Length: 239
Image 1 (tube, rainbow, N blue to C red):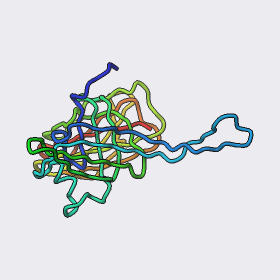
Image 2: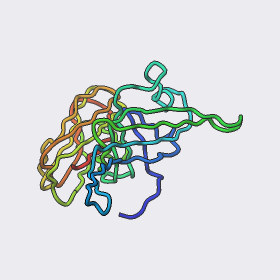
Image 3: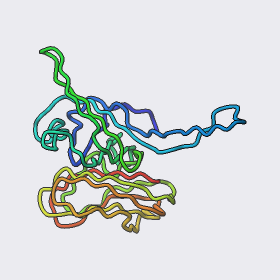
Image 4: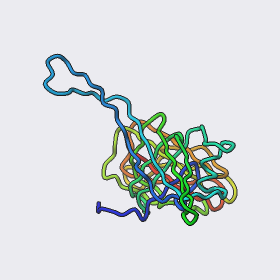
């Protein structure tokens, strides 16, 4: 893979695309605690790993319109949401490009002002809950639109893997009807079976899911149901 710039990075949370409000993502990744276990005969520090954690920092331009950052970050009757947030950060614009997702709570949201001619800005941070952030691949190209039931482009991992994985689904809109979205896998890119089946959606939604066991070489997203104009984004991280 070649080095890349930040032009095609996006930020999605709970079915909202805040890419147009964010001016930078100030670090997203895994923190792993290290526990000292020195003994009296140690000549250097000995450590074992402890709990994993993860954080994400976001800098934004203030926008109070519906569906924009201030509306999203104060959605709990004027304060930050207390429930878990499904966060997805595509690192490129194509199916198969890198991604990172996390299930997190909003730790803080702050608004800042400068002089009268400076734009109002803000910062928010997220801290993972339940599991550390997962680095994976996109099964959609940023946001895909499925007019009807659709099988997405397959991603070839070259080999299968044995340790399951996790996924985040963001549904930004659905014009009509309902859809069940699946992640499917295959050994030959011909015959696919269901790996993850998300709950049925009828409107904006966000879900996360995990799976155990073998994940075959090829992965794709599949939308089913009777609906029109489903706009979605999905990634998957192998365990």
